Every structure is written in C-alpha cells, then in structure tokens.
Image (cartoon, rainbow, N blue to C red):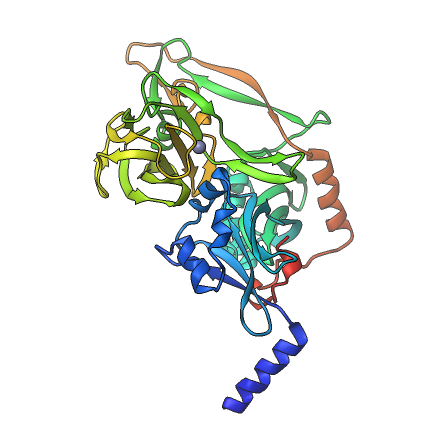
Length: 427
Ligand SMILES: [Zn+2]
C-alpha cells in the first residue's frame, strides 16, 4: 500500500511540478498565523500600506482560496479572493522573498446552450436535464409569465453565461435568451438585466411593456416585501458627519500599476463620536480585525451586513439585537488609520458594495404595491415603460445558430472537482 502511494506521489510530482489546491480559510484563522504556519516571513506585513492592511481584514472564515505548492510541498504562492473582482496574491520575488500584491481575479465567462423537450412538466424536465438548481431558478424567473403557455412536446432552448474561476463555478448563471418552439409557433423570451423575461424586442434593444396601475387616483403605499425595506432604509452611521474617502471597488493606480480597493466609506469623526447601526440587525462580531482595528459587524435581513472599523470603544455585544440608529460603538483611530475616522463597510451576500448606494435611499420610489382605499373608485390605467434588453439581437442570432446547426447536446461545465487546477487559471 505504502509503495503504491509513493509511486503515485512520484508520478504526480514529476509530471505536474507545482500543484494548485483549493482551500477554505479556517474559521478564526489570523492572517499572521497563516503566514507563520506556512513558513512565510512576517516581514511581508511590514511592506503593506494602509489600504493593503485593511484588505487583509476582508479575508473571511470559510472562504475559498488557492495555494500553489512546489515539489517539496511548500507553499510558494497564495491567491485569496477579497471581492468579486480582486484577490490578494502572495508570491516570491526575484530575491526569494514573499511579496504581497492585489491583482484582478482571472474569471472566465462562457456561454452555454441547452435545449429541453418537455415530456412531463416544464420545471421537472428542466431540472432533471440541467442538474443545476441555480440555473433552473433563473429560468423560472425568466419564464415567469410564459410557463403556463409551455406544454408537453414543446421545446425550451436557452443560452446562459456562467463565470468560472480556476475551473470552478463562480457566481450564478445569467440567462441570455430563451426560445420556445411549439408545434405551430415559436417565440423568443428576451431577458433584461434583472433576469426577467419579455416577449418582444426591437432593434433599439428595448422593449415596451404595458404596466397596469390599479387605483391610480387613490393610492396607499404598502411595502411589498422586507427586501425592499432593508435595501432602502439604511441610515448614516453618525450625526453631522462628512465623507472623507469614498468606496472603490478596485482603484487602479495608473503610475504604480497597483490596485487599491477601498471597501467602504470613510466618515470624518472625532475620537469618541457615537457610531450607530445603519439598520436593524444582530451584532455578529465585536473585536479586532487586521487593519480595521477595533471592529463591530452587524448582520441585517436581505443578505446585508455592515462593518464599523477603527473604533475606539464598543457599546454592543455579540448577539445583541440592535435597532437602526442605536449607538453600538464609539469612533476612533485603531488599526491602520491615518487619523480618527469611521470606516463603514456594507456587504451584500459577503461582497462589498458602495454604502452610499443604499444609505439615505427613498423608500417611496421602488417596491410598493398600490392598494385602493375603501371608498375609492377602482381605476385601471396602463403605463408604457421601456426596458433595456442588452444584446437582444445578438443573442437571438446566437441561439438560432445553435439550433440551426443541430447542436442538441448540453455543454455544461465538466465536473469541476475532477478538473486539475492550473496556475494559469488564477491570474
Ligand atoms: Zn476606509
């Protein structure tokens, strides 16, 4: 048995050289401990600037990252994604010292094609053909107003794009177009940027729909769902403050050729200024976090999380339910900070978003249904609305080409777990 393992080991080493593996960052693992346990000198940390040190605080327990090991099993390169587009890269330079840099993630984005003949019911047939829950859900959304018209014997053909990183699926698929073929007619379903389907598109790549508005003259606003509420009701984390540094998803320095993201908004504030929760939520972290210094994190509904950094002191504890506007901490100058200020990060499904895109939003503009009041005369009017459909004509040509050339198979991405990772996949 030992001999077999040894033999396999020798073959893999001599044939492949460096080996890339996918890892999960251990819960609670500190960056410095990770470096130490992999024989990487902590001198690396001395070279980091303020923003780089903050980016280290973005590494989350459980998240995926990649290690490249040499023949002897030593880690020689590490790639740690820190946002949807950027990753930390740790690798040796010419003088054999480990160096830290921030580089773009090398995503691949491919278009895939599927064609399902409905034998029993549309969703069970699509699910059993695609073996992909996320894709089935996206198709359900796209075909929401069409599925009742699709029956046995009809064909549902579709194109979708899917990002991958190092051979592993990344993010969810985006439906591009659907073509329904029935015995006596066929039609296209065009997909807007939000993934909703529309059944007509013009050369201007926009689609005109008629939206019924009920009770137009006597409306009462009602929240449609909590998602909209949480999305639109964030408040400022401090009173009487101003923004000193805006959010940036990946600022590229044109002279130094480096990436410097800033995953939050900085607010100018004297030490000791009360810091308030931007929404109702539960405190999930109180403590020190890399370059962010003393930090509080609050989890909100709808997949949102807020992070308050460089704090001087805490007022909330882990597990506390906090209300919007409730004081949770006091601002300060801890961590890597060039002066007293509050760094506010807002994350949606673990990805940093621009806090100012959700703070101070008007809750009245989107996401309400129109209820008629009891003594109102019910009216029903229609409003025309243009919905942009990106690349509608191009996608129609692409799907027709696939169908006309008789490509009837599924080009799903092969089982990623069986695919050998390559360093070239990572940058
Ligand atoms: Zn900041």
